[in-house]
Length: 221
Image (cartoon, rainbow, N blue to C red):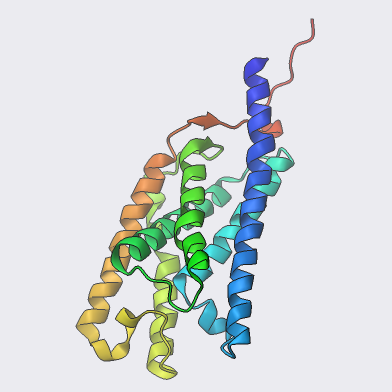
């Protein structure tokens, strides 16, 4: 009985927390985008061309969906857990690259950069690490962390070769093909490494979370 109450309490806290987290991150992105519009630089393709902004938006949507399922006591589908794992791996790369390799706020206010590059990735990472409402992700699917960043890189390179816009200086076409290949390979290696950490963490079960669909009825008497 005590254990079942703990599981119920965890579901009642974690579900709303994910909803709030996702909505707040979208609000921060909206605020940052509003600043860009005010500065007459409101092209959405540019703003969401940044890997950080795009990944934060997509992860927020995933958090809202999984949070709603937890609030409703519904089982989270395996494919959605995989998507959340991919999003978590992407945010790990965002945090490491920003805080270790290229620190700086760019045009965004410092607090916005801190939220998107430190607070949000940390919260998402801890959620994945601690809350056991996801299955152990099969290693044979680790490659699934690559299609999204590969598609992002492809779009960025096409834009760099056509309209000249790239989100990060290391992807400028004038740096040469060798530099581009080296940076793209580095990004993919980082994604695989982050994915391996996330896949391994999916086997932890620090806070077991049992949803209504998973519970068996209590015996009476």
